[in-house]
Image (cartoon, rainbow, N blue to C red; front, side, top):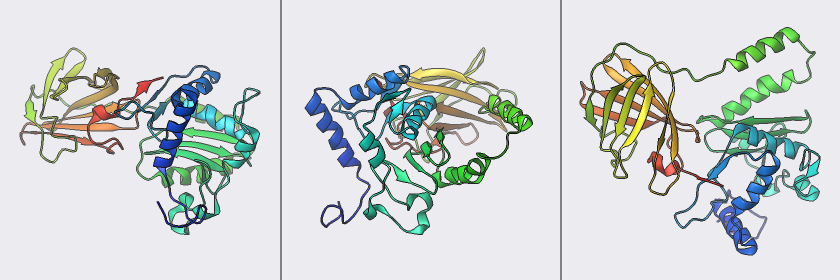
Length: 324
C-alpha cells in the first residue's frame, strides 16, 4: 500500500475489494455471490460461476464467469443510471458517483485509456467509462452516445481493442442509416466463428512425454493421441486423473475435465496433423484461455503451452469455477 494520508495516493487494490466481499458475507450471513445472484435473476436468471479461495471464500475482485449478454445487461444498467427494465437496482447517488475518477488516480499519458483515472471499480477513458477484466473482457458505457458495449475476448494488449472502438464505433454512431451496409454487417456477424483446425492424413497414435519447455506444469507428464470416429482423443496424464479430450478434425468437439475441487472445466477442441506434427487448440470456453498442443513424434515430445497463461497459474484445472 502507498504511504500517505487517505486520498493522497492511489493504488489498484484487489485485497481491499476481497476484504469488502468478506465484510458483506460477515454482515449479511450470505456470500457476495448470493447478492450477485439476485441481481442476475433480474436479468433473466443468467448462468454464472465464480472462483473461490481454497477456504471457500468468494474472491470479490476477480474470477466471475458470466456470459457476454450478462455483461451487456450490466453495461445497459449503468448506462441507464442504475435502472434495469424500469426498476432501480443501483442507488441513484452511487450510480452517479461510481464512474467519477479520484484525482489521485490520474496517471501519465503513456498508458492510453489506463491513464485517465479510476473511480469505484470503473476506469475513465477517452469516451465514457468502463469496467474491464483480464485478457480482454470489457463493459463499456458511452453516455454521450447512449451506447452500451460488452466484449469478451482473449487478447494481451487491451488498449488495441479500445482503439478499435474509438476508430470504428464512435464515428459510425451518428451516420445516416444505410440498409445495405446494415445487411452486410448482419451477414458478417452471423458468420463469425473460430475456424476449426484441419490438416493432412493421420500419422499414428503417439504417446509422448511432456516437453521441458511446456508452460503447463510438470504434473502433466505425458500426452497420448488415439483415433476416434469423429476425430481424435487426447489423453493428458495428470495426478488428478487422465484428462480425456475429444478433438474434432475440421470441427470443434466438447469435453469436460473433472477437478479435485468439484467443478468441471468445459473444453472444446479441434486439431489435425500438419507436416508430421499433431497440432490442436483446446479452448476453455468458460474462460478466455486456450491450451495449444503440439505432439511431435520426430522430437519425441509433447509441447503443451498457453496462448495466454491464466491469472490462476499454468494448471488448467485451477481455472474451475463454482456455479451460483
